[in-house]
Amino acid sequence: MIRSWLDSPAFYFVVAAILVAIGVGTQVVVELPKRPQGDPSQIRSLADRDDLNLVFVVVDTLRSDRLGSYGYDRDTSPTLDAMARTGIKFQNVESQSSWTKESMASLWTGMYPRTTRVDHFSDSIPDEAVMPAEILKDAGFVTGGVYRNGWVMPNFGFGQGFDLYIRPHPRMRENQMQANSLLNRRVVGNDLDVTESAIEFIRSNRENRFFLYLHLMDVHQYLYDDASSLFGTGYSDIYDNSIHWVDRNFKALLVEMEELGIADRTVVVVASDHGEAFSEHGVEGHAKNLFREVQEVPLILYLPFFLEPGLDIRTTVANIDIWPTLLDLLGLPSLPGAEGRSLLPLIEAAAGGDESDAGDLATRPVFSQLNKVWGQPETVEQAQLVAVRDGPYRFVRLEPQGTRGLFNREEDPREIKNLGLTEPEKADELTALVKQFLEEAEPAWDSDVEVEISEMRLGQLRALGYSIPQLRNPKRKGEEGEEESGGEAEPEAP
Image 1 (spheres, rainbow, N blue to C red):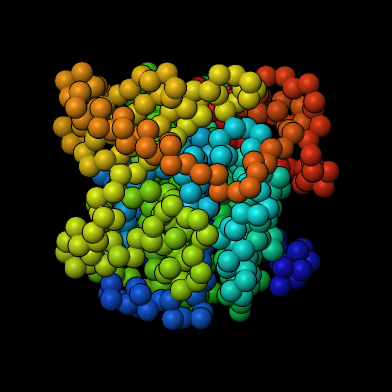
Image 2 (cartoon, rainbow, N blue to C red):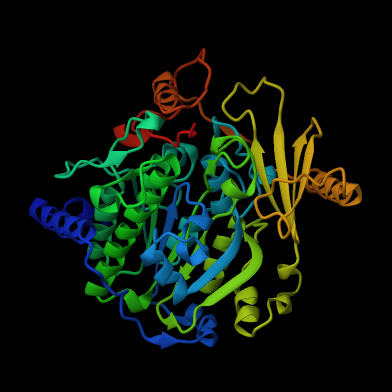
């Protein structure tokens, strides 16, 4: 079917693109796809079905507290809020890094960065890694991926297991998109390109069992159209505008699923790789620290049936739990070596009214990491940030330098007051926990894989705001044959 998707008649694609553009470009209120009503007891039985599809959407740079369903007072996300209201929402989700490649390597493998060793701009996931798309393909799913972030290019190992893995070519638009001029970014295409490609893939594979991964970038790029210019022109306002624009893309995707009659046999998952800072701790953007604003991300499971009411889970979970959960949900083999856990026991405990019934899943610490010198030569002295969420606390330590911060999130939600001096015993306890976490690290694979990135590719990253030095060897292994449009990557916002 992938071949027929690529060879589909031009007029069919044009018609599909026009219909999607009309759906995204209007403000007509559309109800979510009609699905039968269900209850939590039916969640486990999904593993027995042989007709379920899976759509997994990563909204790059989306912090959870900017969504209405996570408590935001602006109407940035009516579609995502409705999905959360009738599905499963995890209120406290920790990303494993605030930089996309490091975070996504952990998300896909279910392993912490200490284990993947993918934390530098030249690192790659090796072929020996078993990725979720490979498990799904072996189970008979047609697998497709559409991405707009260069850090998840196939050259970095993220295309393993996909029948089709592409970055869509930008298409001409009647209405010019808007972007934050303060960022001075070169914007190529927008997420409507992804939405249109996704809908064509779904239409071509509606009779098959499929898995579709979408990686959206417009929130990262602060990109939106006139209809989503709702919240002002300040830096933070424009970020909210872009969320509203992406939310409308979700609506178009869900409406199409209803039109095709597959809403009642498709699981849709919404996640993010990291958040975005607005000077809460003196910096803007991401890939610089591990505080709440860049680490807390949404996770919404939209099931083939609606729950009334939906489940709102408060226990802290991690992005490394996502794929162990989804594979368990579908009754498929687990990820080898995963450090993340299936959250189905936590879902069942929440449905029963007491999340503590999930045992240590409800009390375990959750970690995140950031290689502070990810964009520098590997000869530069290491500076590894490690954070741990343990109960109400977030603890951040810089290795090997040893500087540390301790915050009580219940008393200080913005994580401003460092308790390292006033609660030294707790700081020492979490210092020991971080030390143990790092000492237990064992590489997941026999050898680390590095790729040589061409000077052209690095030039594109520098133009988008990355501070990456000139390389002596500008040739990239395996770059021949890479799609020309794959060079756009995630810029570090100023």
